[in-house]
Length: 177
Image (cartoon, rainbow, N blue to C red):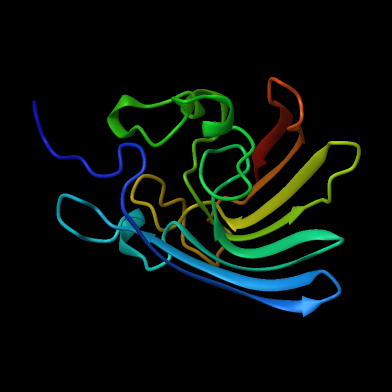
């Protein structure tokens, strides 16, 4: 069957972002990003504005802390992804083809109401810690409960990464409760 399928890898996006220098190396910012389906021009990820990413952040010498909807750490989407496309060209975003993230992770594209902390780099290593108060309630693929209630799955993750080697090294895990 030949057909147009939107977003098989990297589809079109509509994004608004900004940041403000707070002085002393600190910065506050926001990102609001939606995907647009090429086949019918509707918004992806369940039609929500900011369906790909909707977060505010504060960064400085302490690292970065972020609040909102972002890609999971053990995934291939967003600024905190430590596996996914970083480790495997066929990790995610290939639609019907599938990918290794459906095997080695929980397979969420994005997570809602997440608190994410990125450490500063120490000796070439960095770490990211993430807790989501709702795994992915916008995507039609997951719809894990009702947001804001105990029925929604909560995701937590934490990898360690050494990006300076000739071969990228990351180790970590994720879980639900």
